[in-house]
Structures are given as structure tokens and as C-alpha cells.
View 1 (spheres, rainbow, N blue to C red):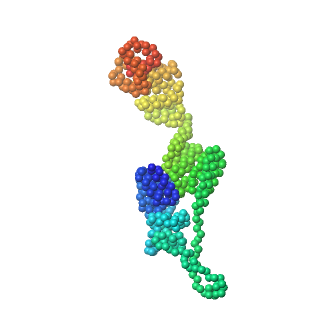
View 2 (cartoon, helix red, strand yellow):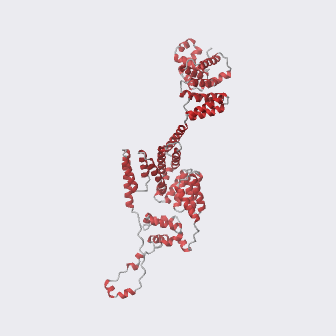
View 3 (spheres, rainbow, N blue to C red):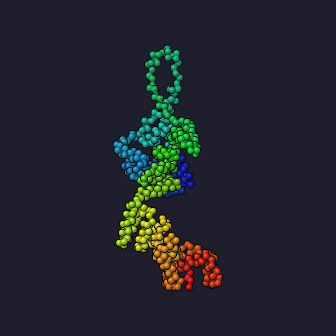
Length: 579
């Protein structure tokens, strides 16, 4: 519901209906009072109708909700500037630029604020002109003009709108525009009187002197005091609404043709259509973002970036939908990723994706950001890769290990892995250090990585088995040692490991371990998913019952290799004891 009201507000704002836009944003705020974008939008709408005090309150709320959002300070600066507080406006724009130094809108606002701060104070206008000009300040001005059939069309005329805004900004400038009949008509509307235009006066409607009379008394006509002729109003450039609509319609057709060509992978034709659409209508940035997408497809990444920058700049001028600005930034980020050659090249692409997400949080943009960060990390590892330096660090680690300086050894082994993350020997050595430091989970992780990199490397199995043995997971340790013996059947460390595991398991069966130790082993075993599956298997539960109550039936069960393997697993884990 809030998004719907926001969309209506954006549409009204784009059409110049600022009061209506403010009402829609107010509805949206009632539904989502914590959304900083809604306060920002309403601040812009209120500032557009010179309700600067209210615009300032909304801008301050925006900054309060989202203090790291540069656009909030742009709204704050505009409101301060509208209220005549140029110093506060300068401070607001500078705070925004500290967050987003490349923001063109903030730069322009700061320049205007500094100019206003440096300008000498205006002399107060005469009381009469000020009193009349003040009538153009209230919000009822727009509603009166829009409701009167004789003045409604003026709202579509850019030069007239500029005059009105200048009078609102500086009431004393009204006298400059009273020669324009439209301004006179609006003034009459505000005063509730009918002001007669010069061209409709009685003198202008009087009959001209007959030609014969002029010929008979030329000297009399010359002596008559003729009034000073009224200057003709300058012809105004009024946009033809029909022509404007036709151009927009033609631009949309070009866009559709471009989309069709893009789907057919006829990229050059697509570019031609999008370019033609831009020439017909420069108020829709989708033509730029679409052409940018084509440039990505054909590898013209620099051209894509230029189009995206134009789209962002133009979109902010037009106050386009945040989604469109986000799309332009996302495509720029994609082009920058394509151009990246080093890990540092990804920094600007990552920053661009982050800016896109501040405009609109889109899953595709977030995915591209994550991919860029991952690619940067991988490239950093590749740039750092140096097997020779890795071997040097490994040797330093070995020296510290011999001196029993295990933390220092870990430091050098870690640096060796940064230089060469594919060396299983280093993982094995660091696992040994972690074992000495009693950091068993970290050591187990390194031992498993060692086996993953080289399944035939016996040291990986001895490291892992030793850690599991110290953790009193004798069943798992024996499995690890047995797995190593498949690759190295005569390895003395592996054979000794199996022997020690069997001794510990047999001790438990003979009752030679304390109740506390047995309980500890059983608790750890119960956390093993494999043990849990065995104990919850209905068949195995019946087998365990028969082992206790029906020895003859249990003998039949033990002939089954699968059942026997599971029983052995339970015995090794200390869950079942055979005496």
C-alpha cells in the first residue's frame, strides 16, 4: 500500500502537481513512517510550492532516519536555502558531499548556497508592491489558476511558470511582468476583479476614419494628439502538447523496435533505434540504459559507462524513479567489472553497485555486488600467489615449531598458505601446531583440508586421527587411521594409531574406564548423525533388544555384514559394550 501511494506521488511530482504529490507522500508515510525516502520525496514536493518550513521539517526527519544518505542533505540544503538561511544550506550540502563526493546535485546546490551567502542583502521592496506580490505566495494560487478556464492553460506554458516562480521568490519583481496580459489576468483573478485588456478596450474597437475623410483633412489628422502605441507582447515559445505527445509516442515505438532487435541479437540496429528514441524524447532515461545494455553485449564498456553516467545525471534532473537510476548504476558497475584487470580495479565497481543499492535494493544488483567482491578476493589471492616465498615462510614456521614457539609457527604457516593455498604440507604442519596449542577444532579443519588436497598424503591422516583420539572419539579416529592405511599399508604411525584406538575401545568394554569418561564418550557419540540414524532404525533397535534378551536370535543377526558393521560402530563409540 505504501509503495502504491509513493508511486502516485512520484507520478504527480513528475507532472508538476506538487500539492497532490505531497498528499500522496503523506498517505505513504502514514503506512510506512520509518521510510526515509518518503520524507525526502515530500520535502522535495513541499519545496517546489515554496512551503520551505514544512520541507525543512521533512528533510530533518530524513537525515534523522538515514544519516548516511547523501540525498537527505540535498533536501536539507534546499529547504534552508528556500528559507534564506544560506549558511545552514552550505553546511548541509557539505555534509552530503562528505558522504558522496561525486554527487553533481550536491555540488550544484553548494555552489548556489555559497553564491547566495556571498550576495549582498536585497533592499526591501515598496510596501504596495510587496503587499500585492504576497498574494502570489500562498498555495491557493495554483488551485485558483487551475480552476479558472481562462487561466488553466497557462500552467502548461514554461515561460509563464518561470515568471510566477520568480514573483513567488521575489514579490517586488511583479512590476516587471505586468506588461504581460497573462500576468494581468492572473492578478485580476487573485484580486477578484476583472481587468480590461488594452486590446479589448473601447478605443481599440472604435471605427477607423474613412479613407475619404483622411484624404480631405490630412493636416487635421496630423495635429491630433495620438496616444503612445502599446508595445506588442513578445511572441512566446509554447510547447505544442500534441506535438510533444506525438514525439513521445514515436520514441516509444523506436524503443520497442530496439528491444525487438536486441532480442534477435541485432545489436547495431538496436543501438540505432535507441539513439533515435533519445533524439525524439530526452525525458526518458530508459533509452540510455537500454543502449548501455547493448554496449555491454558488444564489449563497448567505455561507451556503456558514458551512457550510464548521462542517465544518472539526467535522471536526477528529471527526478526520475529511483529504480531507473539504480538500473543505470548497476549497468555501469557491470561494465566496470568487465574492464577490471587487477583487484584494485574492482573497488570502483563495488562502490558503484553499493550506490545502486542505496537508490533501490534489487536482488540482481546485490548478486552482482557479491560476485564482484568474490572476484576481487580471488584476484587478490592470485596476485599474492608466490610458491617460492611460501616455501620460505614454511621453513620459518618449521624452525619455530622445533623451538616449541607454536604461535609464531602458526603465523608463518598462515602466511605460507596465503602465498600458496594449495600446499597440503603446510596444512599438515599448522594442524600439528594447533594440536600442541590444544586448538583441536582448528587443527581438525586443517587436517581435513590436507587430505582434501592430497588424499594419498599419510601425514594428513595421522594428524586427523591424532586429533580425534585426543577428543576421545576413538571410533572416528580408528576409521581415519584405517582410511590412511588403504594408501600406505605399512605406515607405522597409522598402524600404531589403530592399535591405540582398539585398546581404548576394549578398556571401555572391560569396564576399565571411569563412569564419567564413559558418559563423556557416549554424549559425544550421541551427537554423531550416523550414531543417531543407527539408534533410530527399527531393525537395529530390535537387534539390540535381541542381543540383551535372545542370544540365539542375536547370533543370526550378527551373520549379516551390514548389521555387524553397525554393531561395531556402536561398540567403538562406547554406546554398546560386549563383555
